[in-house]
Image (tube, rainbow, N blue to C red):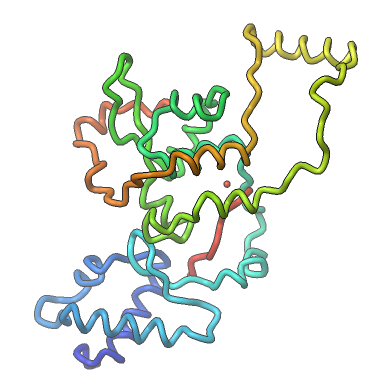
Length: 265
């Protein structure tokens, strides 16, 4: 094999990506070659372009995401390819998706700031789930009393949602158009049946609720508010990294499935 020939190199890169089953950075691909045989960066770029073109008209594509390059099944085949796995995709609550959207569009952001926008407390299981999935991480602490942790998204978040950077997040105006209008409008002044109200009050007491519940913001209202605040998104993850000591001391206090394309194995 002539590694100086972009066509041969493209086939080798295809083999690497097929075997790995996940995104590989250019640096990692460089490391797979011994120093004496390593192609020049220009040859790598030419080979990747040849590989991308060779995928046209096929069921999979070459996609660049935050972590590097990967071969993945095209999105239009996902409904059928998903049948290969018996367990159903995990579904996420509206509260989790709203929290994730706030972190993505307003990062870095604290739990308290999320609660201020949503109008309700953030369940600790939500941030725990997002941290465990490695979609968010603690990137520092706000310099205010209590020093609350600040959250930001990770490269894993970008990879999962098929994004190269935060710049590729859809505009909030476009997201609002996807949010359906409620089919029924409820009369806020309508009287609540006494029996139903009594059961609701009892449930609140059993859950330990002592304060008056606050109405949760609708997803459409949340997106409208985010649209007004969207600015200064961070795309350089290096400037958000904590030192190792800070990461060791950081306390992890706390999407409908948004899976897009499936990695090709």
